[in-house]
Length: 386
Image 1 (cartoon, one colour):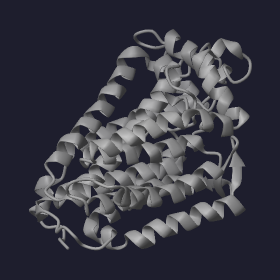
Image 2: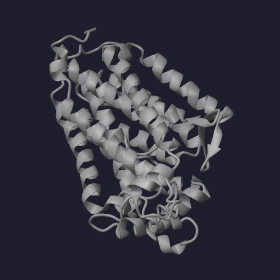
Image 3: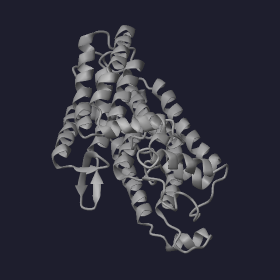
Image 4: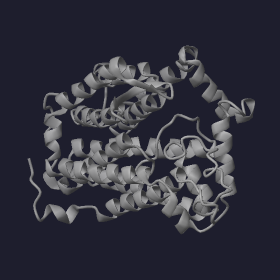
């Protein structure tokens, strides 16, 4: 195991961290605008800010700062420690997923939350980190990629258990994140093309059976995604209001706490988390919204480049797993705000309000920084038992 040394700090990725911090700052302003209400009748945003309840903003900042401390702990320990602790991390997350089915609280139709006083904790978020570590360790055992059904079966076994538990929670969005991480790692690890082709065919063939077993809510969301006007006052309402907010922002936006905005009138649903991008586009317009997208693009490209500069398979797969997780969140969240992706309730990394999501993304970023600071360790030995 490699400790952090003065030489390690040479590989601390300042641009990557700066992009995350800038996204958080912009997101905090948007969360404040989404949760604050212009009760003064004044167009002066300063008087509005002075009169608003800032409790949500304070909590958002608290989640971030505490998440940074957790990320610092993750960085402190050599990432091979997490490789050795993988069984405990994986089965611990599975135990939490089972427990939440028994003791959890149902929110927006998904039984995926533990209620801790007046706060909530979503174990499926932390399970994403466990899944990334598990898959990174497993794929590092196959330097030539998955080449036969036995090796594929091992991968699917570890994916299927948490995925099934998340589907039982009725949390389809998080289940899609797990599947996307797995698909990306299968692809980048050099899996035999025949296996990839077979999985693709199996996936296409399973679409109709999956449609049959979906609940009414999931089916409705897919149909409404294709045509929101079919249920404008029901399931199509969220998408319609979101697209109206995005379009009304124009190039420069309507400004913070503008009394005539859809966000101030509370027409945008779950506007501090799921549809925070809609609030952003309406409030500060196209230019700042484009900046947010560019920052996310920078993070994704940066991690992609760094994964290719990492000298051991395990570390590289960790970065790719985090990249896949965040890419799906970004594309899905912004896509559903624009009406080009179905509504799934997936938050925007470092931007949306929510403690579980913020901690998960910061822990994931801690893993990436950890790998980058120790990436000169050399190529991982092949053949070590999983």
